[in-house]
Length: 150
Image (cartoon, rainbow, N blue to C red; front, side):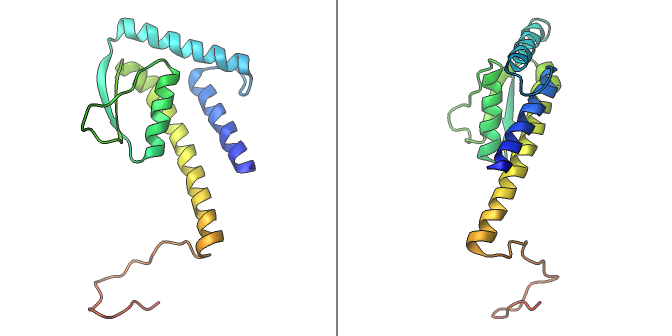
């Protein structure tokens, strides 16, 4: 699937950008970049003590991405009993969130949302109905029993 391969390549490039690594796609460079980010996190933890931060994700895909990204950097995401599944709690230095985690998450999440939107629209158009456009907005409520005209 060419679109998926493009998404994976874009994700790798974004990760490389935020990890300050060398060329994208090189396994050695990617591992070195990850070690640098982890070292940066360790340094920030010495200077900027971890605080508990709570994130509310708009959907399950964003939550899964954030959790995976946290785990990649050796962080341990969690949530408290009775919190929504869309909530992710993390003990982390604020500087790491502001400088590395959140910007990287934002770029990766946008790429993922774009990909999922493209796939969803394609499947709807091919399998359900060719017109996958939004429903039109009406200026006022319709009287009971009537239908909108175009």
